[in-house]
Image (cartoon, rainbow, N blue to C red):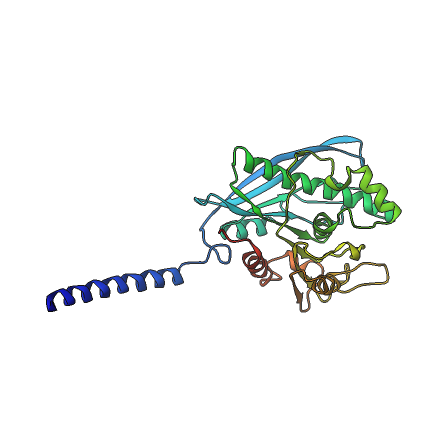
Length: 313
């Protein structure tokens, strides 16, 4: 009997030692989605996701995106972030926000940084809303591109239950209107006309399908809205990162009717929407879109998505 008890004790000791060793390894390993978990990423450039007529020049425009994913990843489903750069709806560059795509991909996310149709100016309500709803139409076409992929060839292995959108400045404005504007929302006449001309709430930039998409969260970098009442209870979570010295888009609200990140945060909280606000001390309009000038911004975005995403059951 003593020999048997000794053998059992040795077996338990070995088992407990193995379990402790694995626990130590788990603690030492980087936590996927929260930390860098992959040494490298893959960048797929200039993928056409849709095409649409641009009233700026009267030509059909091919709309492209750059997609970033972790290199060597074997996960069957990965969260998606559709990232929309700024530029005041009137300009863009080929590599804006690629640094976000690279770092987030190395944490395990799939990130799509996309172009949208530009406008010549946003002077006045009619021009502003036309530029805005061209951009939301294009952003929705990106989301539907990945929904179609997930239902078909599944090239990017996106988890359709964990889709996030966001962007900087005009891209943040676009994202918030994509996420929060719905049939219950009331727009001024100029807004209603521009929305109708650009395909309504669904947009007209392609990849149409019956399946409706549901967003998990929105990342607002230096953004604002005009129509604050479009936020309703039960809508996607919101992260706002905004410089407290931003002289382009207000952190709060201004006389021109722009409602920035602090006002949006209060509105979301009052409705029970999960909302996180980070005011960047001394930060200007560009800081939240520049990881070198705002080293805390990308970790904040990772933590927001990590704590907001739906976990597998």
